[in-house]
Amino acid sequence: MFSKILIANRGEIALRIIRACREMGVQTAVVYSTADKDAAYLKLADQAICIGDAPPAESYLNIPHIISAAEIADVQAIHPGYGFLAENDQFAEICRSCKIEFIGPPVSAMAAVGDKVACKKLAKKAKVPTVPGSDGAIEDEKTALKLAAEIGYPVIIKAAAGGGGRGMRVAHNDVSLRAGLKQAQAEAENAFKDSTVYIEKYVEYGRHVEVQILADNHGNAVHLWERDCSMQRRHQKLVEESPSPVLKQDVREKLCESAVRLVKAAGYTNAGTVEFLVDKKQNFYILEVNARIQVEHPVTEQVTGIDLIKQQIRIAAGEPLPFKQKDIPQNGCAIECRINAEDPARNFAPSPGLIEEFRAPGGPGVRLDSHAYAGYRIPPNYDSMIGKLIVHRPTRALAIAAMRRALSEFHIAPVKTTIPLHLQIMDNQFFQSGDVDTGFVERALLGK
Image (cartoon, rainbow, N blue to C red; front, side, top):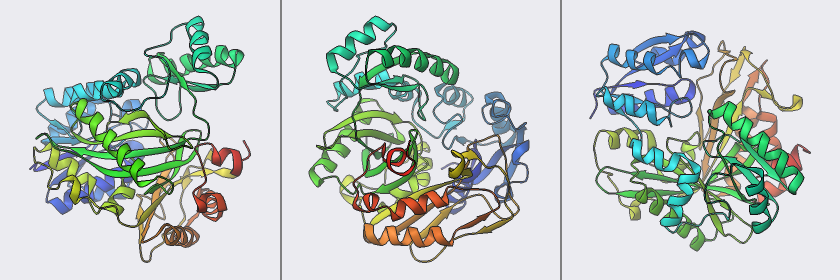
């Protein structure tokens, strides 16, 4: 086991990793930017090292600065968290070339699943269902129009190196396809320095269901069941839950088995998530693989009782998984609401600034993962998420009731947050019945 780990991230995930390491008896060094110099979690780490100014390019995305911090702290491994450099195969390769273990998958596996076009080809070989679409990159308008005519509208254009809804456009006819292709390529180039896009059949009224996997370096791979992440806004998840409220058990098992089959084919190790699109007939198709820990990992932890961060660290240290597939339960129902410093009444405008009042919820079955507190100043430089509220109860109805109660207790002022929207979601009869899809929030709640 490692004696000391560097955490190359910030906010709630940095705090989450510090807590896991403390329980394991592993020392931590955490990096921070000048914008985060007063973050309370820095005092919980054994060492805190400033790596640059507020802009991510000067700090949390600055590989030389992070490697220098790791060498100064004399660590054996780096945990990248999520976002920033978590899925950067160059960073992973540099870490390992410096004799520092990267707590994540091998570079070869990151490459195999990181590019969505390559991942789709791998999925076909592993007999994992894929959405009808292009076999490779679409480079010109003529090819795009021909393919759309073959598979039928609507189609969706996606950035091969994309994520977070960037480089993505839906087209319902030739005119919107021509415009969307150019827009998606330009957006992909700007966001990822890679204009490569591909086209798939757009599954209307689909659900977003993902499978958490763990794989060790000894040939063992398991799934930890699924999470339903269909409540989204602009392809950004708002609410996640496990189990999915609509999947038939035989479909659930096939979907989860497909995820394990894919990661084995990729030679993947450590934690990862295989994301699927599920249509109204419960046909499922792979979307992508996230080669890192997910924001919504607590949902899986609550229903399985397995600490995913600890398992990541143990796998990276060379330990085998301590359980088999048959040992992994799916108990009760867990729901997570992402609490963002945004104003839903003003088109989700960011709401950085000083938190003067912070009253956290509690009670049976309530978990709050947050680095925020009264007196904390939310910087404008990073993602607006300031916490994740998770509940776990024996049934979904009880979980919704617990979440509604916890949200009503949660008080943050004067900054605006998404708590009012989450209360609206919990009270919605369609959400309560499970009759939703990835476009539901914008279509039914926001009127977009």
